[in-house]
Length: 265
Image 1 (tube, rainbow, N blue to C red):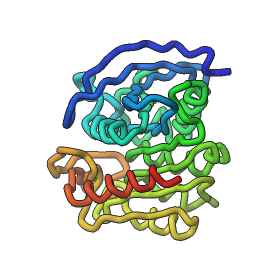
Image 2: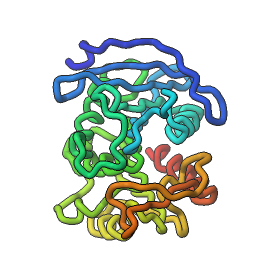
Image 3: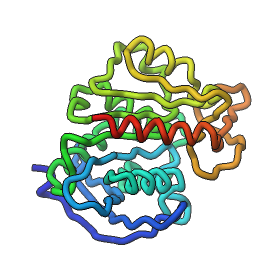
């Protein structure tokens, strides 16, 4: 079993964003012969807990100073407070990748990252703190695109819910993509990096849930990102720029909706 090969490093880290959150760094085998790392946060309540696997975006899981990004930190804090264990999977660090946002030729694709999520699920199923029948996935941006590929895989039947924040959906429109478990897409309707219309069409065609937020851009659920423009690969604009930033109203509604989904039996 994969979990027997796990090396668990108990390293406490202070994840700051709306309060400190104790987490431990864990490592587990990938499905490509290497090893992956992740940050695990657990609720205070004893007994097997429902778990959320978190998948970072194209900028990676950590900031330049080595801290977990504010978006992932904030979601981890909220989910842990609600009784969920959270495993943030680092697909980039163990492979020596810093970021992929400005690269069109990417060494690691969402299809490749799908294997990382299932490797995390393999590991979780061997851990006594995790309820193996109540594991869900949340992905953001590139991680959201990964989440949709996970949802379309037969192994997704091992998962309770899959939630994708502002994924890219154009590629999947060209395929006979169908979710194998409960799947929801959260998208800003003003997103000019991963536009909403392809995801709306994909959801309508496949039966996935689509939740759109008028006027919201990419990264709308970030806790404190001022609205700004940046260069990015796969921009939908002639100047190669995209708009990113928090939207407090959309963020609050998304948090409430995600919590409702995750607590659905």
